[in-house]
Length: 549
Image 1 (cartoon, rainbow, N blue to C red):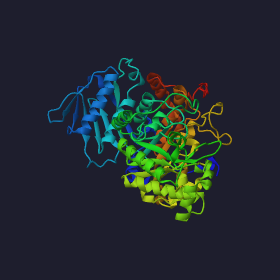
Image 2: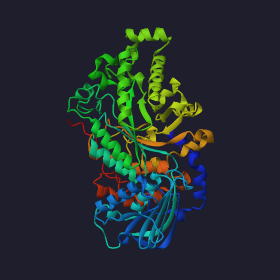
Image 3: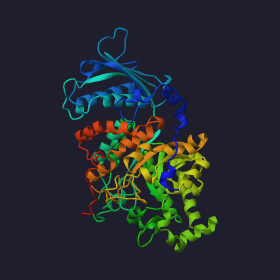
Image 4: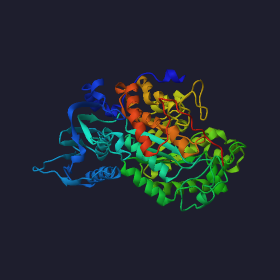
């Protein structure tokens, strides 16, 4: 099916449908034009303003871990902007002056991750039923402030917030970004910049692709060669330096993400894309091909399962996420040597496995069951649908945009699904017809900002019960052709803003021209953050991939 035909219709996840319909019933285009990305579900503006410079206190209904963290995070933002911080106290009947008042109670009739924000002359009132909803309300306040606050060049009157009432909640509960650090490694500072941007745009899932053919990127105590051998080099320079995250690095980044209400989902790719691991421990290799040497783990050897189970145990200890992604894609690239391997031939005979597909599916089911035994759900690329992993224990990521039947089968079999098709959600694809460095698919076959923003318009065709299985959307940054920081940012910004809108904003509330107007202000923020980006207004010159070693 052609891409243009795929993206027809609209839908909201019915998990949020009831509350969002009530919100949307109050809204029209004129009411929704506050300068926030992603667009809020309802807003109504007043005529006066609140002067943040005069704010002297944050009052909370209860001073607990969640309210304290939110207040500290907001104060930290004020401090970085060289603004005065404010005291945090419990609200009382005698409270007066210019205040921010926070009411965080789980029993409030506000959807999880949603919030209500009301700004009047001398008071900002925030209501939320979850800590994440409170955090997102503060991000909205941040976006209502002018961009000059981000670069610490405070203009006269810049701290005056418009009087406004906002009611907001996300369309989907999975609003994700994936970074591939196997092909090219970027390091802690860059990951933190991406996490900061995700928080700014209310995105909440960071999928971290840490193992693949070109490098193993995190420390496993039981298998030190994974980093002393497997982490060496990258796609551009296979014999380069060792590049990986220590376990302390991982813990630091996980904590950093948690403070921003972002869950990190680690990916340990199997049974294909195993080259870096096999280089370190040849006994677990299932072979490969001339183009993809040592591409697979060996599904016929117990040593392979021992290795992977030990790796996954340490992975589970490092990442508190309820999900572990185990890949499962593209095994057919280089598994023909399995038919010549004595251990695999023995497995096929003992388990009555008729062909290589059945060997692969046997492996997938076995490893998924182990992940489930760790108390985690398995996440996999959509090839794993064929393995019949139990739907209640797995999440499928639909990535093959040219195989809509894979999505159909996922939903028919009852899997929860994350939508991340190559087009338009792979950010290694070019974003303009004038660009030459990056991937394309067909003609024009690009992943430009309008397509990202309008995604996933096509899901209306599915019945309500199947739409309920769609957890959300995700943009994927594959880095075979992204080596340097400047190119990473160029390929990610501003499409990350479009991806945020895809996950948060109801389809009927989307207005691309309005989004572009808000993006002009966001570009000033990118400049303040030191972020390189593609300027959609001028079709700015491409930052090309380099093969320099």
